[in-house]
Structure formats: structure tokens, C-alpha cells
Image 1 (spheres, rainbow, N blue to C red):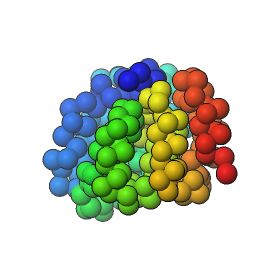
Image 2: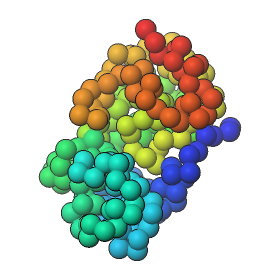
Image 3: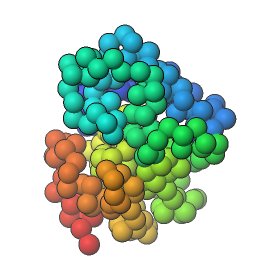
Length: 217
């Protein structure tokens, strides 16, 4: 399956590869995000551009700042924690530190199947577990499968789009996924259709109009 994989997304996945691969082994989501923050801190100390772009995209105090500006600010490890907290939908790091829930790997793996374009496996998974259609992420943003499908507001390493995504979204809606479900991001609550309008990835992939026609209600 052809995947639209933006450069920044590919670089993020490569940078965090080891920590992401061990996601299911952590005792809690908070513990995993702590490892992600530590990895970001390593990248910050090494001057890795991927990390500066991530901070620019998510840290509530540094949104939109260029890597050059960020390099001049002497950012600290606490800034990495704040950036990770914001990326995963939390307002502050204390919320992450208090999150002792483990991952729901059934949901996490279902998101991964969808973003890999594995539609037949996805159909089988949903058939056996229909509650996944309405389930929300345990991250602070509370994204549903439909939210992950538009590649906006969710963790950067997951902002990839399979080219059969319109077929997948059509299937999810047909089986009962709610287009009115909202996730918490950008200081508000938004449906997948609302987030689609400001998402550049579906436009760049050439599937924006198909997704809009499916999600518009």
C-alpha cells in the first residue's frame, strides 16, 4: 500500500524509533512519555533539527518559532517535557506524570493498522471489537480513529496517510463511527471534519476532497 509520509513525520519516526518500538513494555503511558521526553532532550543537546521542529509545532510557549530562534534560547529538559505534554494533548507535564493508565494496545494497534492502510485486517478487528469505532485515545487529546485519519493535531509520528484512506474512512462511517466526536487540541474541541480543513497532509496526498465529502455531514 502506498503511504503518504511527510518528511518531518518520517524523520520523527526514525528519531524516536527505539522508544516507539518498546511502547507496549512500559508500565504506564506516563512512563512511556517520560522516555519520549528524555529522547527529545538527547536530541536537543545534540542540536537535532527534528527536535526543534517538534518543539516549534507543539510547545505552547514556542509555537511557530524557527529552529534558529529556538537554538538561541538555551532550552532546558523541562521544555522537552512541556513539548511532549502538549503534543499528546496535555496542558502541563504534571498531568503526564500522574497518568498511570497502561496503553490499550488493542486500540493503539488498530490506529497503526489504519495508518498502514491494512483495510482487511482493520475490518476484521472492527468486526470483532465494534467498540473501537467510538473509542478515544488515552492521550490527553482523546482522538478517535476518524481524528487520526485526518493527520492533524495528533502526535507527529502518526501523521501519515495511506492512499486508500477514503475507503477506510467510508468503512468506519458505515459501521457507525461518529463524525461528531470531538478531540481536544489547539485550545478547543474539534471534529475530524473541522480538523481536516486545516490539515495540509490530505491536500498534499491528493485525497482531501474525497475525505471532505465523506466527513461533511
